[in-house]
Length: 152
Figure 1: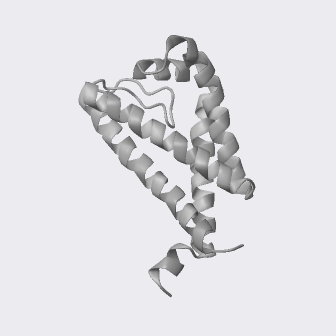
Figure 2: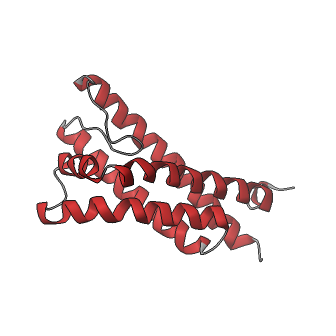
């Protein structure tokens, strides 16, 4: 089996798809449960216009859960993967902008109630968040790769 075949193998693709779907569902749940805290985290990024913060805090988690569930259920997988890729790029850019600014924020990715961390801990967490998001983006790329080379 070649590397190309291995990366496009259905066994791998299904597991990557399920893992990515589960990650996005788990990330959405705390945000859905506490929209005001998530809105505050979006505000802290200092990127989204004030008039769009609340709607972003309400819509984004539901988009994440919808995409995650689609991957878990094996429906609309192409659309879900594409939307997740777009979300991940936005997350990476937003965190990167704040790193460059020196604005130590909590990303709000999996926990909307992070508190009590030092500036240095938050900066380190932001770097880890970017690496994690790049890893998830590679998971999306694996799905694109498999879709390109395996005719289902």
